[in-house]
Image 1 (cartoon, rainbow, N blue to C red):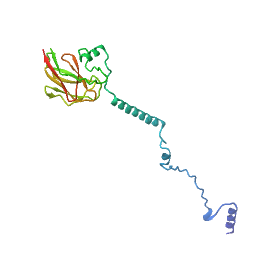
Image 2: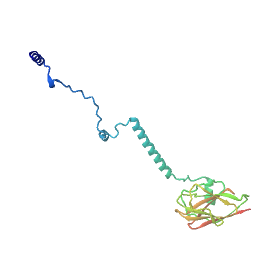
Image 3: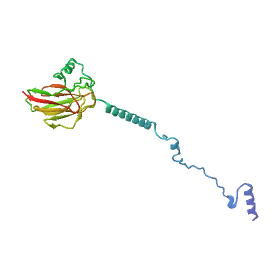
Image 4: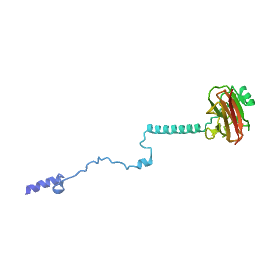
Amino acid sequence: MNEIREEEKKQQANGVPQGANSNQFKPLDDTREYIPEIGQETYDNPTAGISPFTKRMKKGAWILLGVAIAGIIAYGTMSTSKSVDTSDDAAAALESHMSTSLAAGAKLMSSDDNYVGGDLTITHNSNADETTLYVWDYAAEDGDYVEVIVNGTSLGEPFMIKNKPVTFTVPTVGEVQVVGTRDGGGGITYAVYYDMNHTTYFNGVDQGGNNTYTLVRE
């Protein structure tokens, strides 16, 4: 017994704990990785985590979209109007209100002049049963509307005449009427071109009035 006590004294003297309190625990280093609070960094910087390449792509997409929209707007506002023909043939056509040299769609004036023409009898030697009729505004595109009637039958609803011709198929013998249904301002100035005789007639009509073209084969 004395030997045991002596041994305990030696161990206590050497700093070695005994009994239930003899176990010493050294805490391990905390090597765990903690996930940061989600949303905080994104809230502070919404572009965090987006690569520079992605940012450039998005910026380029917005630029292309803007260009496309601008192009659509520009296209929608473009006019079909063309430049005024100032040639000698055009000047002669203004005097006679007729031309065999000017092409369909010729523009002779930049604004309407309230010209009111009249009915015409057109004699030709075409053997064809039908011909193409071109109708257009030879002055300003100002919202004039006409209706084409052939032998008492309308070929469609009234339409706005522009510098670009609208075409119809009509008989080479009979009556073709051009009715002025709306004056956009300055009178309804229009021209018709017949393929059967390659001639343009520059005419005009009041709103509610009409010009009759009587087509006769020789």
